[in-house]
Amino acid sequence: MFKKLIMLAFALALAACGNSVGSSYLGKWVRVDNAAATLVITKNGDNYLIEDVEPNPLTKQPSTAKVSAVLKDGILEMQTAFGAAGLTYIKATDTLTFPGGDESNEYKRIK
Image (tube, rainbow, N blue to C red; front, side):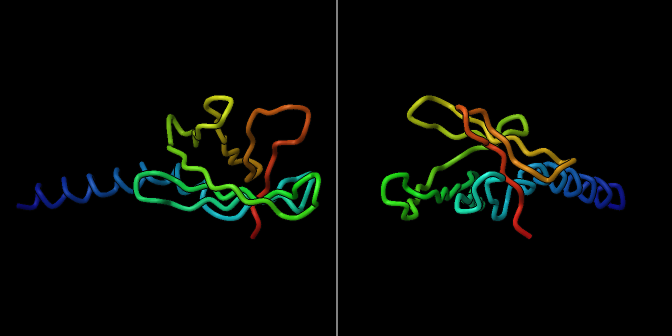
C-alpha cells in the first residue's frame, strides 16, 4: 500500500511539472516597441487562447483577434493565414518572442 501511495505521489508530481512549461505563457503581455499592442494568453481546455489587441494602422482604434494555440515541444504554436507560427517563452528575460517581418515581435510580461 505504501508503495502505491509513493507511486501516486510521484505520478502527480510529474504531471504538475509537465504543465509548468505551458503556464509560463499565461498572463498579459505588452509589445516592447508599442505599449498599445498586447497579448492575453489563457488556458482553454487542452489548448490556449491568445487574444491579440493592436491598434489598427488606419483608424488607430484597437483591433482584437482571438486565436487558438497548442503547446508543442515547449513552443506555443498557432495557425495563421501564412501557416504555423510559434511563440517562444524566454525564461531569462521573462519575455515572449516570435518570428516576423521588420517589426519587433518581443513582448514583456505585465506584472
